[in-house]
Image (tube, rainbow, N blue to C red):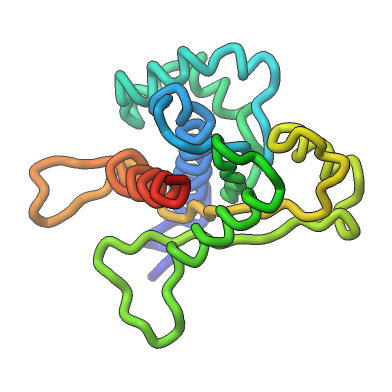
Length: 213
C-alpha cells in the first residue's frame, strides 16, 4: 500500500528525496548570502564547503533572488540557469556544515566558545520539555590529528589569522530532511511560508547575535 501511494521511483520517493536535496542547497545559499542580506550582524559565517570563485562572483545576484525577490520553488525550478547552478552548489548530501565567528574576536578560543554556546542554546537536555519555537542544530569538532593539515588549514584560512596554529575547529551542522521546508503549511495560515527565512534563520541569527554582544 505504501508503494502504491508513494511510488518507489522518481515520481514518488525520488521526488521527495529530490525536494529534500533542493531545500538543502537553498539553505546553503541562504547561509552563503547571509552577510549581504544582514550586513549589521555581529558575526561571520564560514561554510565547510565554500563557494567556488565563479559562484562567489554571483553572490550578489543570488542574494537578490533569495532575499529580496524571495523566489518561490516554481520560480527556481522553471529557471534553467538557476537549476543548472543549483546542481553545482555544495555537495551531494543534505547535510550543511558551517562555523560562526565573532567579528570582534576571531581567535580560535572565542570561535570554539561561541559555537559551543550556540549548540547548548539550541539543544534540549534529556527529560526537559521542548518549547514551541525551539530550533535544533547538531555539532561536531574537527581535530588536526584526525583530519590532517590540508583540511584544517583550508577551513582555518577562512576563519583565523594563523590557521596553521589551530588544532580544533567547531562546526555547526544542519541536516535538511523536510521536503516541504520552503513550503510549510499551518492550519491558521492563509498562505504558505518559508521555514528557513521565516523561522529557522531569524532565530539562529538572534541567538548568535546575542552571544556576540
